[in-house]
Length: 567
Image (tube, rainbow, N blue to C red; front, side, top):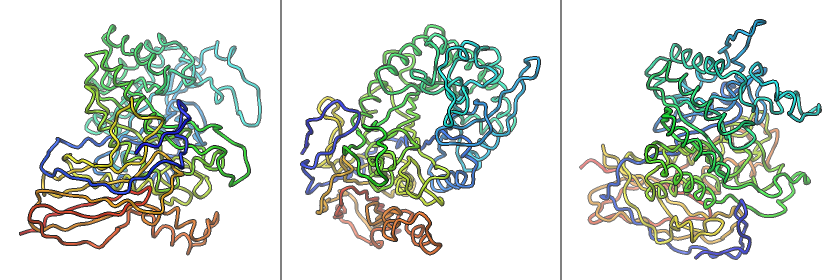
């Protein structure tokens, strides 16, 4: 079943038009095989542009997710400590908290932090507070001497260009800043709310986000953790939010060594993974030109990076059972580029992306079963982008005018899963065998199944997907979904995400792909942006099970819910 390409060891999945398709699959739900509480790693999101949290579109996006979410999400914005004007730009923002008077005495302005965390909490979520980066007043003098900078219209100042990535020059003042923010949040939101928050030092310190040494980072972590615990004795603090590459592995190991040897507080371990870095990353080609090389995100790349990081955690028995938080778990980078940079980013507009996410989350849960260390959150670095064109192809839940992209419906489907995970087997699933897989997953049909402990209802997400956004198949796959052992009367509900369902992008294309849509066109698009029913509800009476037949195009996702009828 696995169609392999000759191009290997590249940071993406090359397209393979000769790859075989799955013609038929049987998915069997073991309705009485209770596998415990269903972990929900998808209940987390983040973004670079902290100041877009509280714009009208940002607020609505968080409220929309909060409205359907089955559990509060952790929300992680960058740049709360950066100095600036509070004007959000792609890949940039500023909380502008820290200031000093003429005598060098610190004072704080929590205006933007309040706007940010007020919005997150009001929408029903909890902040994951990324304590970063260095405020202008704490930039060390040597940074100003050594950092390469040449004025240009696209670099506003040395600070925006990179001074913020240097270790602060005064760790005591940094500790005071961290403690002041924690105290302010405790006073503003209360202990019950803030006890649900996570506090994390920095972001990706193994690369250019940190222009210091590992030892300097470990020292800063000690100061940061002590500052949090001085205000919140039970506050959950962790890190180091490294990248998924070799430098991240080395840095994580060094960080955990320091935490163990110095007995530093550590409540979670964080790291990142990205499914692709397209090459060329940016083409500078004509508007609307196809990608020079067809490439797609690689599930395999992401799972291999997570697998390595979990293995590093397991080198330290004291930390092996801490929550692993993959607080950037993304199909491709960067978030703010789109189809005008490289047409390969087009998958972010389409049904491909939510189906990819469903598969990825299930494979992460499968990977957990092979490890002592386990992923508890796998954060999508997706939010909304102010000022973009319609269906720009950025990594976001919404596009211009707040139109919800198909990705949003993938998370709506996740929210329908019940509280208990039950066993499920597919004859066309690809197992998580990282040694046998190539650059990406071949086409498969797989599923995740759940059951309610309160009313006995069942919810199953079934998908057909390959790590190739360009794969085409005119014929659907016939999928038998079997629920052996069920008896009695049931209502069957079906939802679908594919090209023709739950897909604002194809509706936008059908009305002419307008960049200035009329009110009527906008209404047509938004009427179709939600998670759509695929079929009318049906009642079935089971004697020894229920069987349904689905026809799944490539790619697609079906949500099937069975509710028991009162006898």
